Length: 449
Image 1 (cartoon, rainbow, N blue to C red):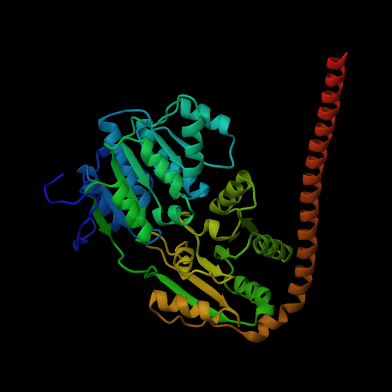
Image 2 (tube, rainbow, N blue to C red):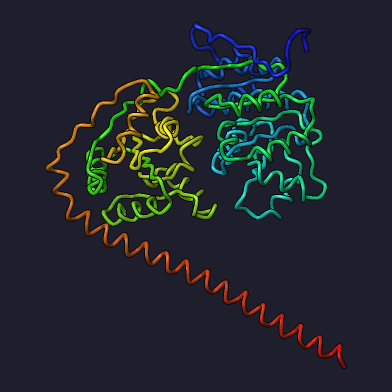
């Protein structure tokens, strides 16, 4: 490290003002340029233009960029190019906050590296640890993991270690730390080589991220393409001010008005996500839920159906609001206003991605005015009202009320089925416990004689 340069202090780069360049101009090798072309990546995004040349020079990178900016390509391409130059197993580790994001990053690594035989493994919770241990034993080139499950394998999977690791990526670092993975990240940093390249990508530079930067990076270059909280220019943002009791009717009205588009609707709780999905299905909409109380397989199933356009409406909690790259979301609806203003940025960032346009509509009830004002203050603009015909909304109330009633019944039935399954499991455990006690008693008697 150069004399007088403090470790962990980032050197900032100015965003180039010149015309968009090709991946070849950034120093990406031909075989990877072809892979980009096959993925439809014609021109590098701002963060890719900034970060890739620096990463190819072997520097540590802090990437600050708005959501949907092409961050995965910005770290995947330099890693794959380094892997081509010095092939090695267990070469790179990517840490991410959510399971869905881990699978998505894995897909991009597989797609970019398919012609050079790159193997990646996803290590996340909700999936059998034994099959993951077997995958790790095969020593893939790239591991994409959530911190908790990776620590579990580092502590308990025999023969698995990351002592030869060359690259560490922390994607959505602000969210990893907000989800209280600090202890796990510390444990991982202690068992991987100090002599490695580190890329830290984050939508926001929080105090926790700055602390992590000082601990994990050496003399990094900061590549920032957005300096404040902002939303994409091509995103048309609206709000509607409505009485709380008519929220469902207004939602149905908007879905009818904007029919033919694909929608992502954000709800605040798992229960409301499930209820609203059932309500919309009863009214003939192809709606599908995605929330934390679903099994991992069901979550991936929902996501894949929506991605494949088999369903046009995805209802989600904030578990899905960041990092998911679903290219064809036309409209984001904040059915329940986010409690944290920053979550608004990440939610609406699901549309208008990679240069496309999109719409977002936020529902504001009499209870949400203060939260909405905070959002406007954060993004630095006043949002216009979405044009509506109130009398048309009121004409829907009867049909919506009937669908609400059926949805409540279905929700109750689902809850009862779940409870009875849990009771059966408890009964089985109880029966096993009784058998064990009886068997234990018999053994004692035999010992007595």
